[in-house]
Every structure is written in structure tokens, then in C-alpha cells.
Length: 276
Ligand SMILES: [Fe+2]
Ligand SMILES: [Fe+2]
Image 1 (tube, protein in one colour):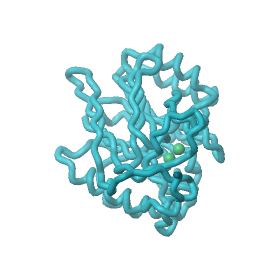
Image 2: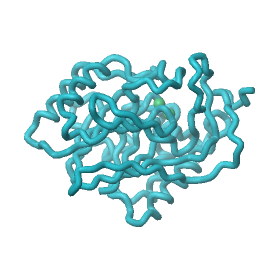
Image 3: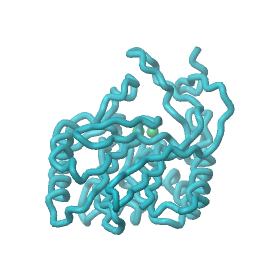
Image 4: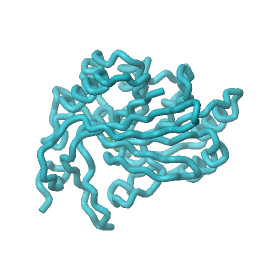
């Protein structure tokens, strides 16, 4: 089973450039073309949040227009740049939540590996949360009769990456409880995959692999200084391809580049200006 992960699209309405510099709509078009050209083709695509940049209906209309070319199943969780209402309205099939449910939590049971979507959005805030109701939902899913191996996907990582300005907006409330739940089921949670940090980062957390995906558009500057400023960098856009080998019960993650940006790769601030 092949799972493509596309994350942190940051699509702006009218193809507005992100940070006055990044053609995110063009980047998504290239990502979709890349996925559709892969052989073998992925079975499913997971979008791990920041689909839009402001979370408006016109942003999601542009995303939907571009995703017309993505003719394999895909699913989404919201990121901090998204808004649940417009996202769900634009992509009901990609956010298949139960009637009356406030959060975009759901389970995809169509594949060999069970896919569990967790919504960490705290609307209007950069950091993520998992309230008790959501943690109870996850406990219920993991305690049901389906004991297959599974993968959890969410936007905000529950870890500190060392990139200080991103760590200040990681998964806050609920992260410790999530660790307890994951640890309890670590034998069959094969990975937790996240977005948000715009860099490929791998670790082990609560006894399972935790993997953060690179952005399909622009990356966060690799800067481990405690006072490092918020900055992005035009390193090449990329995606993760997670390969689940059901026979060997092994999940392997490949990094695939989607485009090339000419180097060198200086750091840019949120205003799109060079940080010297
Ligand atoms: Fe993002
Ligand atoms: Fe984010």
C-alpha cells in the first residue's frame, strides 16, 4: 500500500503568492502531476493540513480546481491556516466526519492499513490542541473491534523539533494524553505523520515512528538557534511516500522531490525579505 503525503499547500486566492514570493498554486499543480505520474501510483493521498493560507472558500475553490487532476482517493485534516467550515464544505469526501461531529476526526477503513485522522486545529491560533472529547474519540477508535495496524495523521507535531519558532506553536494541550494513548497501542500504530513544520523530520515518540513531512511549496529555514527568527527557505519542494508492506509489517518512508529551486538557499522572513 502506497500512501502519498502532501502537506502545507498554503494556497492563496487568485493564486496569490505566499509571503509575496512562493507560487503555492503552481507548486500544488506540480505535486499533483508528480503523484499522478508515479508508477506504481499511490493508493491514497493524505493532506496533513494548511491546505489554504487564510481558510477562505475561494482558496478551497482553487484547491478543488487543481485537485480535479488528482483522480485517486485523498483525505484531509485541517492545519492552523485552515477553517473547518469552509474546508468541509469544499471537500466533503476528503473530510468524512460523522453527522453532528464538530471536529474533523475520522477513520478510513478502505485500505490494508487503517488511517486515523486527528484534527488538532485551534481555530485562529497557530498552535494545536486535542481536547478531551477528541482524545476520547481516539480511545474509542483504538478500542473497537478492528485491531488492524494503523497510521495516525494530524497537522501539529506533538514534539519539539529544535526549530524554536515552530516549537512555540506545536501540539500543546492534549499532547501528553495523546502520548499515553499511543504508547498503549504502540504495537499496531505504525506511524504518526504530521505537517506544520515544513521540513522532513523523523523521530520516535511514545514508542512509534513520528514523521513530519516537507512542504510541497516552501520549507521552514533549518535553524536550531534558540532565538532563530521565523524564516522560510526556498529549498526544493518535496513529499513523503509511505510504503506499507503488510506481509513484513513494515512502514518505510521515502522523500521525493517535486521540483528544483536554484540555490543557494538564503533565509527569508515572513515579509518575503531576505534575512541577512
Ligand atoms: Fe504550514
Ligand atoms: Fe501549520
